[in-house]
Every structure is written in C-alpha cells, then in structure tokens.
Amino acid sequence: MKIFVIFFAIFALVKSNVLERSKIFQDINCNIQDPDLDKCLLNGVRKSLPRWLKGIPELGVPPLDPLYIPKLTIDQVISDFVNITATYTNLEVMGFRNTVINSLKVDPQNLYGSIKITIPWLHIQTDFSLNGKIGPMSIENRGGHSEGNFTDIFFFMKASVKPYKKDDGLEYFKINKLHQEITISDGQIKVDTKDKQYQPAVEMMTSFFNQNAPSMLETASPIISKTSEKMTKNLLDNILSNIPTSEIM
Ligand SMILES: *[C@@H]1O[C@H](CO)[C@@H](O)[C@H](O)[C@H]1NC(C)=O
Ligand SMILES: *[C@@H]1O[C@H](CO)[C@@H](O)[C@H](O)[C@H]1NC(C)=O
Image 1 (tube, protein in one colour):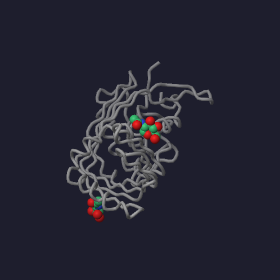
Image 2 (tube, protein in one colour):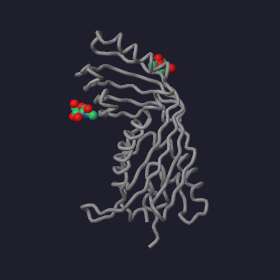
Image 3 (cartoon, protein in one colour):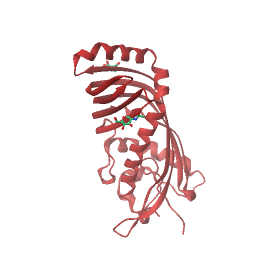
Image 4 (cartoon, helix red, strand yellow):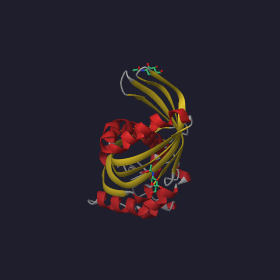
C-alpha cells in the first residue's frame, strides 16, 4: 500500500480527493510521485498561507494573526537561584501574516518533514503573573501587563508522524517526534506591574534586557523553543485528529 501522507497538516498537504472539498486544498495540489514534490508543496503552502492565517475551524486551526492564547504557563527553573513560574493570560501575538516560508522538505515514505520559516516582525502582548524566587527574594503573585516587539525570528521545525486508531475505528496520524529551533534576533519589551512599588526594579530589568536584547534572547532560545514545541505538538495533533488517514491515502 502506497502511503499518501499529510505530513504536519498545518504546513504541508498532499493531494486528496476528499480533502479537496475544502478550499485550502485547492491551493495545494501535489502528486506524491512528483519528483519536484517539495517544490510543489512549498508553492502550495505559500499560496494557501492567507487561509491558514484566517483560521480553519473544521481542522481545529485557530486564527493565527492575531493569535490568541488564553493561558500559558512556563516554569523557568534557570538555576537554584532563579526558579520562577510565569503564567501568561490573554496572550496575543500579531505579525504572522508576514511569515516567509523559506524551505519545505517532506519524505512521505518515512512520514517525515522539515520546514524553515522567517518572521520579520512580531508584536506580543500579555497579562502575566509570577511565582517563585530570585535568590533569597521570594516572588508571590506579582504580575502586570507586558508587551514587546521582536524582529527577525528564524524558525526551524522537523517532525515525523505515526498512525494510530481512534475510538471511531478509523486510523489517524499523530506527531511522533517534533523538534524546533527558534532564534529571535532582537526585541524591545515594556512591562507594567500591578503593584507600582515594584515598577522601578522592573524598569531596571527591562532596560537591561532592552540594551542586551540579542544576547538575552539567545539565552532564552531553548526555553522559547521547548515551549513552542509543546504548543505546536498539541495544535498539530488536534488538526491531524480531524483527518482520517484514509482521506489522505
Ligand atoms: C522550583 O519551585 C518549585 C515550586 O516552588 C519547586 O517544586 C521546585 O522543586 C523548585 N525547583 C528548584 C530546582 O529549585
Ligand atoms: C512596539 O511597536 C509599536 C508600533 O511600532 C509601538 O507603538 C510600541 O511602543 C512598541 N513597543 C515597545 C515595547 O517597543
């Protein structure tokens, strides 16, 4: 049996009669046997990008610009010294509409693929609360509002999928392995604390960050990549769980 695969569905789609019902698939009309499959997919994904950005409820894809994330928790255990749990709420990311897809590779036989993306500019704003400690200083329920502009974001992802059976008796794909590398070249942030008592200290920290943004962001890159990996995996598993493999084959 030949495998016609949807490799991570948000970015790459392979021809399927059933799925052609959906407008998104009109843009991506590739044959798995095409020796230039990667090129065909790349063109198709570029063409269909505006539709993905608007969101595709049938596939569980939320609107991506702005992207709204109700809640995100990140444990930032940087060392014994710094151990903070950051909870972000009402997080909004703007700017994905400028996404440039640099390259796309798929290996349908091994259900594997990779993608490289550049995002020229993102604006992020969020409410946040912090719990934990920095050295001897304990931080409980401190929070506020934060916003930032980030530029030249390089995104690399490789992933593989594997089939599994759902309760409905049909076979679906889910993410097997997923790896991301995210580099943010520069950024400027602004933080407003709820408790004005802390505002001067926070302003010292943010101005330190802003003056050293490229190296600070480089240090944060593994945390950013890991957090994004988890979110992407959930999103892609959700999308793939809406499309039986029989519709893809
Ligand atoms: C970080 O803090 C959490 C919650 O207070 C605690 O459970 C965990 O052991 C701490 N980790 C380190 C490395 O200090
Ligand atoms: C981010 O960019 C917007 C639009 O240019 C600007 O209004 C805002 O002040 C910037 N924020 C920061 C933290 O630099």
